[in-house]
Image (tube, rainbow, N blue to C red; front, side, top):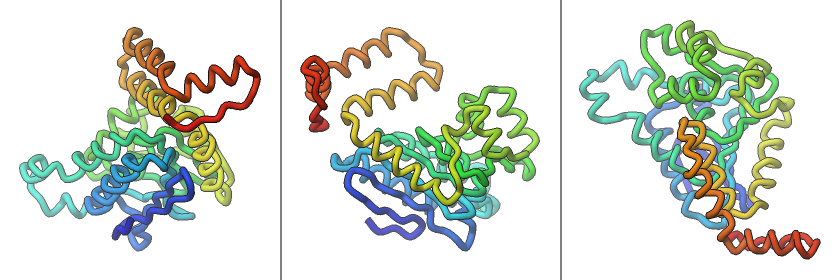
Length: 256
């Protein structure tokens, strides 16, 4: 796969997507979102890929949203085009687990990409924030609702209404990120997490990601979660796993 604003590499069952607009500190633009949507869709269809790492640069993940694209358009044009929303929906629809490796700044659209990820490994120098309010605008890809669901209304209001950014430690404390690693090791740590997930039965992983996403959205219908749990028992890998447990041996998963 070849793209203008991102890089894509595949190593076995793990794919790595790198944000690649260094001259703008990886500011998220429409072209980058389109490239990301295309890459995620292609990787989602590739059965050999079972986990995806999303990374930025060594000193910045993505330092904001390229607001210049909006300053040139009328509100009616932006609503009609859905400049960012359509690509964001395609990215969020990926069924493969996404692990974000975050060094440095993850602001604006960068933070929204973090919030679309399933697991976030933050470097100790990572900073997170939505500075959009300093320009009188809102995050453009559903960041208000995603942040509110992730960290709660009070913390989200504090970050969004004031535009302040938070450290990796504070992000860990409020549940925005999953782990903190040394900045030199954050991508390696994300790859280890991705490889561990990729070793798990693919059908079960996909169902678990779906169940977690539904729970985060507040869809806590017990029957729905119970249905997903029952479905997880029906795969060939689930039968192999249960047989291996009974026979006291290591399971041999075929991701079916």
